[in-house]
Length: 353
Image 1 (tube, rainbow, N blue to C red):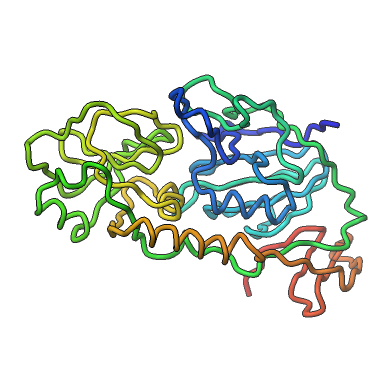
Image 2: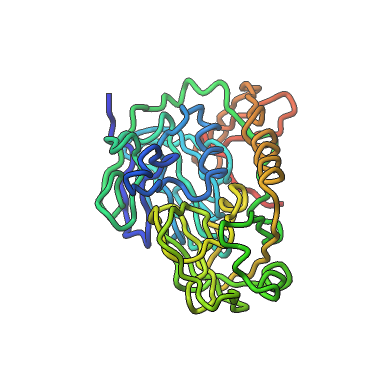
């Protein structure tokens, strides 16, 4: 059964439905689309116990409001947009139990670009080419969200039955650490001049204002090629490919990019760096480190091992009590014998001491 779960209360800057993406159709020129920061997206669904490839809401920049039309469970991951439910701050990276009529407000993120709002059992939406993902330009699958839109799911939460909740052993730090991204050499890397090869690792670069889900212009040291032209006969490209147009500024292809291009493919961002790169905002500076395919695969395996395998644990309800505060009843639940996880009115409140 399909239930109305969320109403978009205010006009988002850019929010859309995304899942793992649209694969096996690249030979027909179909972009992958899908969540940009796959680590944050996947963790939200893992915490909720959702099946692989469940659809979530990807929110860029923030300043978005939601109203819940039925009780459910949600998890907010990615960029910290200071989420508040009914005006009360709640934690990121934890399950939030939502009641019918609750209102969620997300502020503009001070740093990082994308947050993910995942719901229990995922978002119900028709698939296009085996994916619910939204392409930001073409009318291809998914749903770009506007004020008044209704989101559906197959789950309604019975708050009285909450006896156990999932938690993370380790919260990812890929949004907090220094902006250093690893890239492997592309097919046309050796067309670069020796100076440009050195500049890639020696210089800092900056994300320009020319960015979207299709790609982003990288500003900084202008790179040169040996033969004077960076044009090539059009060839295959993919998300993470870094091209070198004629002006010497690198351009990186992202989730909604084309599958063929005519500029030199000098680098490819490895997967873990690509996920973190999609969290950059215009003006953010970063460095590039050239790596090998073997080391890139090793980093991906390590990240999956730390954050996506055996990173979820469950705590049972330890104690529950209703207390009166200024005439209002507040339900307090404590999970785990360590008494570390406290839920007030079924929500993990963000409390600073």
